Image 1 (cartoon, rainbow, N blue to C red):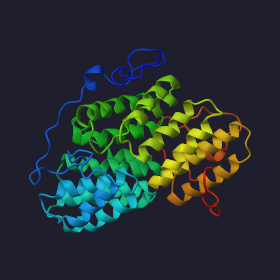
Image 2: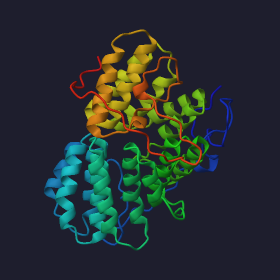
Image 3: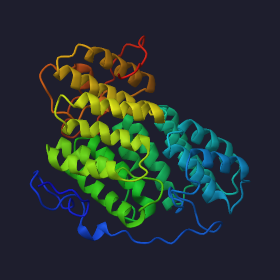
Length: 382
């Protein structure tokens, strides 16, 4: 029987056999985390506020409209903007962060609002703009090393990975790794995403373990959500450990209050573990969630996977979804590798969705760009 709890899927394993999995059991017990003070605490990616205050998008919007920016209200305002992003309103989160960051009292808080805006732009598919905004956030933080720089650095790395600029991403992560503490969690996840993009799967899995431990120790029941389970599951799929990947994804999807974007990513990967006849249904559900949260990068990936799933079933509509995926990817400026599927390769797989394995000594080589037709619009998956 496959392990189904995070506390059991912890240790490094190279097969689908039952037993330890992704994290060590000691990490499965969440520790209480002291709520940060209002004005004295330095900001970082996680304010320490609970997920149910402001609570939902309407309440968050009301709070942002009615609250005056001051040192004591900074954490709550940042959290409210984060709630908008988590609930599928990246355009509103980006707008509020752009409005607030010029008026914050310290460079540290300006960095935090810029970093969150970069996250929102990335979700909207404005990938180059997200990378630029994250770079400005790093500059605003100043030259001194500190945990605050780790958050915008992670967003910047994620953006340039999506753009296929692996050497640049590696450069942003150069230097000693930070201490494995909660403010560094986005940095570790970004490093894992770079390992995954470079096909260094065991390194990626080891790094996602670190991210998962931090999330379980400090992030229980709070925003923001770190999708380390989906990251680990994608890596397990690349390693051929499908059963373990499905168990981890089932855990992710069972989490209460999972936002539409994270749910969609988990569903897209879960479809890889489905029987072929069920895959289009699962991917259709992922696409519905992505339309809700307006994530164009993930929408392109899900449509590419839907094309592949339909192609395996002999459905000629697969070509339509392939064109929609490549059109959307081109609009977002994505590299061809950004649409690389987690499905096992099959004869006849459309060349537009493949990318070369990195050569020895060129682990972060930027893949060649591919032309994509741009005269189609992305329609419904149904």
